[in-house]
Image 1: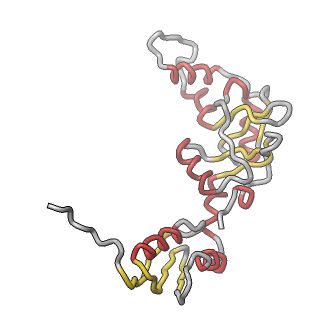
Image 2: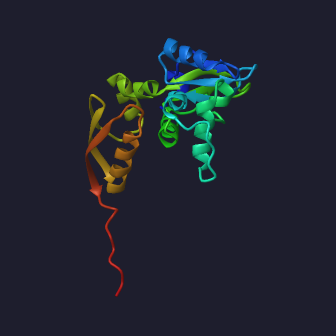
Image 3: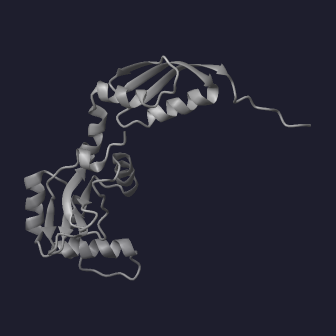
Length: 218
């Protein structure tokens, strides 16, 4: 079973309007104990995201009013943010979003690739923000009850059995016998991809080895 964003997301949309002040943004972050807020338009559609890193530029940038021909585009943008006073000036745009139907695995991959700690969740029809997915929400899949994990794992097992499945803190040990060695390898990989599985130890016996390497002809 693939766990989707809707199964773990926060139902509070942590957002500010484009004209929100620097102080308003800081207050929202403090109130909800988050490291970023989504910037939305009047229809609650995401325009961008303001993170703590964006706000910190105000403190660390000491040359925000200087301009150099040798600055990179990133440096120029950081100086602009350091001088910014509203959400629309501070935000990184466009906002990276997910929908309730996005798999948690894909959302986690997106967080890792983009180096972000939370994602706005939008309605796929209206495009409006309806919630927020945090890193801690993604990690909740690793606290799934062992019974749920075992049910998902046994749904992958081929017939006939029997197979043994042992689960301890997300670590899975699976035993039994399959027809081919390739089946054993594929089964272990499939179990490893079950949401909430930390790792798999395969104690699977194969009747025949279909992965024998044939030497090249001389």
